[in-house]
Structures are given as structure tokens and as C-alpha cells.
Image (tube, rainbow, N blue to C red; front, top):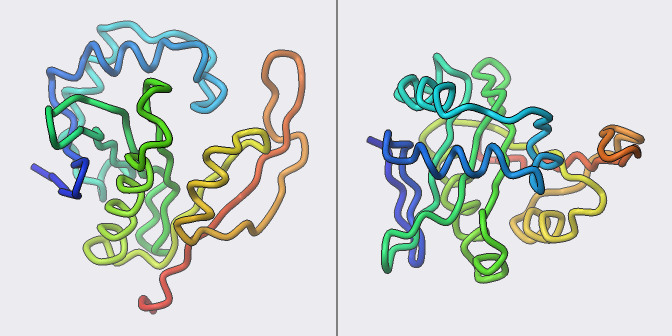
Length: 178
């Protein structure tokens, strides 16, 4: 089982016990814009998802890890790799801390740093990328501070609540991989 340890948080693989946590996140309409979700998920579908979460990243083309507090094992959020592309040595990355009171405490920064390091040292990736809505200032700051660079702006990319929003494309290139 994959576990990555930091100073204040650790990242671990999904467990069947995460059902209610995943259910709450996937059905929280306030974050649907971030996750590009437009419909709720049933506990049954999430249970099936968790039963298949053991798939290798090379098979599933994605990896979802739970962000936990090292002090009390509190589940704080999720960090994902998606569109894992072995041939081109790249993957998308996304992060979510469930509750606002856990944001701006360095948990996201530490989780992002741990996963980026894992991607470059263990998965031999050349680049990571993320897509961030222009009004998500917290994520823009988080990824910028971790070395991701803005490489493009996708105009009117996402439609949510009756209006279009621009979305930035950020990349982090590992210059040590060829």
C-alpha cells in the first residue's frame, strides 16, 4: 500500500472506510465546479469505485490519494493524478482540502510537494500539469509557489452557474528526466 510521509501530513491509498468521506466530497455542490461534476454519486457507485481503487496507476491511468493529518490521522482531503501518460511521461494533478478551516495551513503545499516528488522519483515523469479556474486564487498561488508555471489561458473554458470562465494551464517540468 502506498503511503508518503511528510512533516504534518501523509498521503495514503484509498480504503473501503473512506466511503462516507468520498461520498460527502463527490456530492458537495460547492466544489462541483472544481471537479467538473454535474450530477451526484450514489454510495453504491462510490463503493464500486473503492473496490477498484487497488488498480495499478499504469492500468487505471489515475491515482487518488487521501491527505491525512499526522497528529491525529484526520482525513483532510484528496490529491489526484489523472490522465497518466507513460509514453509522454506526464500526468495531470489536482488537490482538494475538504473543509475551509484546513486551508492555508500548509497541508496542500506539503501534499503537492510529496506527490510531485513521488512522480519524478518513482514514476519517472517529465512533467505535471494542472488546470485552474481564473478565479481560484488559492490554487493559482499554491501551484505557482511549488514551481508550476503558467503556460496558457483557455478562454471561456468552463461553463458553470450560467457563465463561462477562463482556465489557466500550469506545468511543472522535471529537467532531470529525459
